Amino acid sequence: MPADKSRPQDRPWESGWAPDTTRAPGTRRLWLAGALALATITACVTALTVMENDSAVSAPRVAEPTALAASAPGGLISFATPSRSAGTDRGEQDGRPSSTPTTGAPSGSASPGPDPAEKAPKPSASRPPAKSPAPPAATGTSLRSVNYPDRYWRVRDGYVRLDRIGSSGQQRADATFRRVPGLADSSCLSFTTADGRYLRHRDFVLAANPDDGSALFRQDATFCPRPSSVAGATMLESVNYPGRFLRHRSFQLRLEPYEHSDLYRADSAFHLGAGLG
Image 1 (cartoon, rainbow, N blue to C red):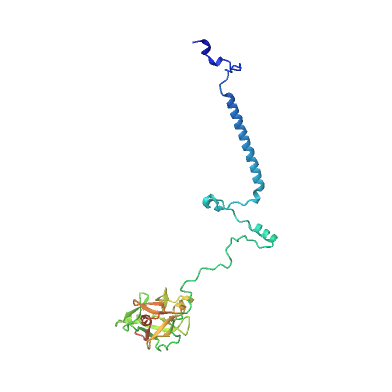
Image 2: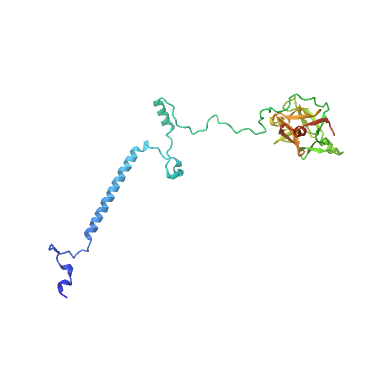
């Protein structure tokens, strides 16, 4: 093989210039790439500096994002309402009240409603006439059912039930009550047991409880006698729940709204007679 073809790198180029073999190939391109990268970094730093200066100057006029920004749907940022002082100044300049909402609770906010037992509903238009028959003169009183004439009111396990009364002295004593003027209305009636407890409705169920001295207790323990469709019988209407009368259901004395039915009128009618004890 000829000697001039064994080292083609020693040949001069067509221009007559021989390549420099003392340095690695591609050095010029590396220098150009480095210069371009340095110029790019310098331009980015300059742009960031300008943007920071601009944001620092305009920051007081920009609303800060609220704490809801992280929870806004779709990654949107929610901005806070302008401050109260700013809104007030704008309202005074424009001659219009500021529309900025207040964050405090309104001074007239309603408190939680009273317990159902404390708030009496409006009187029912369907209740019987208000005029009542004269109650028995005897102090010891028993109350006998109209549609179950062999059953009387009796306190058992703290509640008033409609039971058959035998010859037992304890049963007869439990079915005898002392009739006194109503605790909440002296024109009505209240009933006490031999041990001094009063008959009062609790959750619309008639029970025997000691007087706790509250206005609610006095109302729960007061019942007004009303005439019944059964001759000689009496219905007992609640003072704090007008339109609700004592009636037995499954032989349990309860306070229920008046109904235009023969069953209701029979269940809520009682004969007030002499005490059994």
